[in-house]
Amino acid sequence: MRDADDFCKFLGIIFGGIIVAVIATVLNTVAIAWLWAWFLVPLGLMKIGYIHAMGIEMTARYILNQYSWADHEAEKEIHWGVKIAQVIFKPLIAMFFGWIVFKLSGL
Image 1 (tube, rainbow, N blue to C red):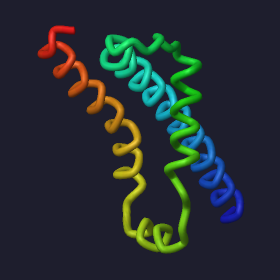
Image 2: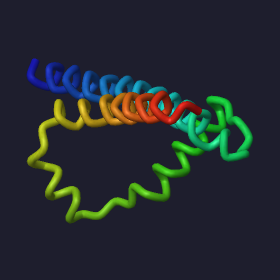
Image 3: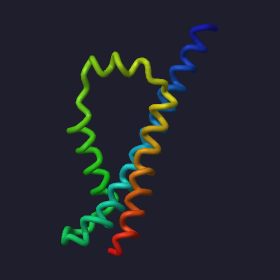
């Protein structure tokens, strides 16, 4: 019975991780697309769609999130709820403050 419980917990972690990753990717994609439209299109750059924004998000994540074992050891102390809140609220906060700057700038 213990093995079945462990397996169900494992599946819950896997599916929960996938759901959080999808939500984070969508939120980051929307944040990049909106911030791009608000601040870079007025400078003469071409407007991008959500697919291009997702590509930029994935490329930036690949380039900037280099993994090291030292980081892994430090992350053991961080609770998963905090990590999930960071991934979800980071793009929302960026969009909120970007919107404020956009509205104040009069672009």
